[in-house]
Image (tube, rainbow, N blue to C red; front, side, top):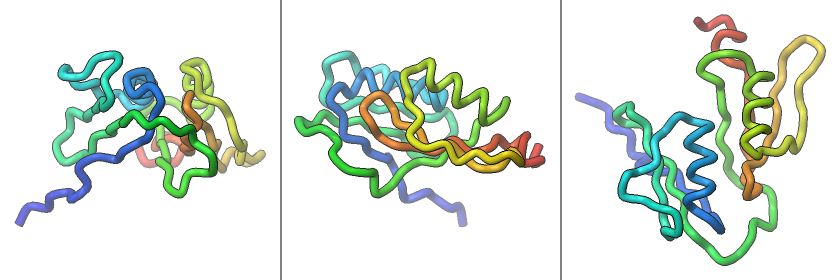
Length: 130
């Protein structure tokens, strides 16, 4: 029997769905749906890999007001955690809490341009997994 991931999309509220989708597209490498355009109320980005949930950004009128109850942990597919933190900062992310330590362990809590938090962990290379 083949396992089918029951999670279809992970959905984010957004003021500007297309702009925030472009940020997450640059972060993940997922592609913005060809059906979506600037000004749309819903924008989807998807992985080329089957069974991987897409990220869906939906326009809402209210701003984020409290800490996320759920967030994504990002593990860079190549390079290092620190290089990924720098790259994401250049894309408009902000460091919220730096949990890195002198031994090279830890993570960095960041927020996307609309304030949605996520963590950047050490890469698979840094963990000795590749």
